[in-house]
Structures are given as C-alpha cells and as structure tokens.
Length: 398
Image 1 (cartoon, rainbow, N blue to C red):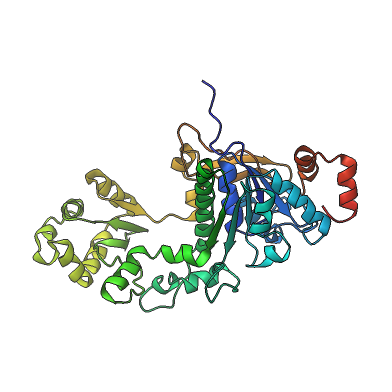
Image 2 (image 1 turned 180 degrees about the horizontal axis):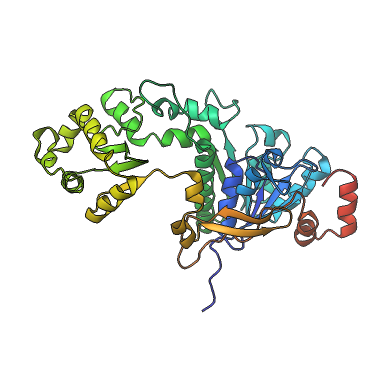
C-alpha cells in the first residue's frame, strides 16, 4: 500500500520570518508536507545564519529550525522585489511574517493589500505584544516576554531571583501557536472559501501557559510565587537527590503514596497520620521532603528507578541534553534524524513530535543554504528564465 501524502501536501507557504518563533512554525508546516519558501535578504539571510557555533560553516542555531524549506533571496526594500513577492502571493496559500507591527503595512504588504491579490491567503503575523493594546509597538524578544508574561516570576527558588526557562520558550510557544492557527485557518477555508489573518502575540501565548497558576490568583486573590521544584498541590512531586544523581518523583494520589512507601521499604510512612492524605502531605511538606531525601540518599538513582518502576510509581532521572540527544528510546521513536547537508555533512536533528499514523510528517530535507533555491522557485512558480534571474541578481533584487 503506497504511503499517503503528508497532511499539508499541496500547501505553499511564503515564510518571511527569521530567528526562532516564525522559523519554528514554518518548520512544523514543512514537516507536515507544506512547500515552504523561505524568503531571505540577499547576502545576509536569516539573522541566525551568523550566530555561532558553526558546523562546516553553517550555524547550528539556523540548522536546528530550518529543515524542509527552500531558500529564496529577495530584497523587499526594492520595488521589483516587492512586485515579485506579490506575484508569489497570488500563487501561495500561506504567508508568515514576524516583523515589528506595522512594518509590512509600510511596505505595502499588509494583510489587506495581499488579501486583495489572493482572497484565499492565510496571513499569519507573529509579534511580541500583538497588534492592539497600549504596548503593541514594543519589540518582542524571548527574554523580555518571559519576564513580562509572569513565567519568570514563578520560575526559580523561593530565596533566589527570577529565572528564565532553559530554552527560548516564548519563541517556541509562539511558533507552535502560529502553526496551530495556520492549520485552523486552512481548515476554515474549506468551509468559507476565504483566507483570513492569524495574529499571534508572544505575550498572549506565554500568559496562556499560566493556566492553573492564574486560576489560583483569579479564584483566591493570592499571588503565586517561586517555589523551586515544589508543586503547590501535590507532595511528593519534586526533585530529590539519590546517592549519585538527581531524580524526580511524582506521587499524585494516596494509592501511589502507599506504593511509594513500599518501594522505599518504609510502609509505616503510609500510615503516619501526618502523611495519610494529599492535603496532609502538603501541610507537612517541610517534614516529609527532608525525610525522603534522607532515605533516597541511601541508594543510586538507577536502583531507585527500578524499585519505583516495579510498583508503578512515576519517577524519572534528570538527564543532560547530551543524554537526551543520544537516547535509545528517542532513536527508536524516530526522534533523532540524520540528514545529508552539502557543507555541514551528516546533520543530526530532532524529529517530528506530532505522530499521525495514517499521514505522518517527516524531517525530509536538510536546511537550505542561503539562496539555494532562488532560481528554482522563480522558475517553477513564476516562470522566470535563468537570464531573468541573472538580471535580478545583478540588480540586487535577489
């Protein structure tokens, strides 16, 4: 039986984004089969192409989020460059941009102008603070949005300063939200026969992650605060230190607590009235957690993991990034993929986490070199000849 097309096969995406939020979105769409044309500034390209470290002259940052794309260089500051983009818009389904709010309108490339050229266009704009509200003009940087979204205020230990998440979470969440929004707009287009604008604010996306923390404030008026690795409603549900490494223990109900005590060879703890219920364990956290750390220090993390697994208690060892990138489990799941790159060589990337069993996505093509597909795209999509492209290149248009 032949493999079905990937779910976004036949969808053409013009990707004007750079750095992380937008490229992460377009990579998701490309993994799912969309034809992604990455529009880059001639001679410079995506900002991250120049960010170290490098492999074979290619920036590892750029390589991480730009697979399954074609690179077209196009100078949008030139009238002819903008004219070419408009011709491409007429033949495309989606346009992505993450310029500062108002930039595309000043170039004559805002949603209203492009929708007149192609009413079926799904136009996705990603910005830091959105297109409305008193702070709409602010530029969006991951660190700034992490700070202003409340996420940093609840990240870190009680007696320490606010801490950012270890990856660029605001950019990544905005990129995922944008991919979600684009696919929803494409789905709606089947019914309405018209495209629409999708607007993603990094601040909106991050504030939405507050979920139950915001719920605590809305419901009680209490301000959630930094708690380190402590969960506000469950104990033990945090990081502990075994004899040789850190591990996590997730005991979310009384049944798991009884099994946990059995694995610890301390069944009497399950009967201790201070720890007999979820609420009592939270109330007596300052007594219980040091006691568990004392017990767990007696064996290696591997030994404890075997014991917890045997009785069905959720537990995990804190792994390094290197360990995760070499994980046999992730390799077996197809989450570590090798792609051939002309200059970077055998390039390893993370695979596709969304697993569609009938129409699966795929990390198929390596990230493009700057302008690698300019001639191909302009020829195949717009019918330009090699002579036409050479003239455009000589004029600094591509």
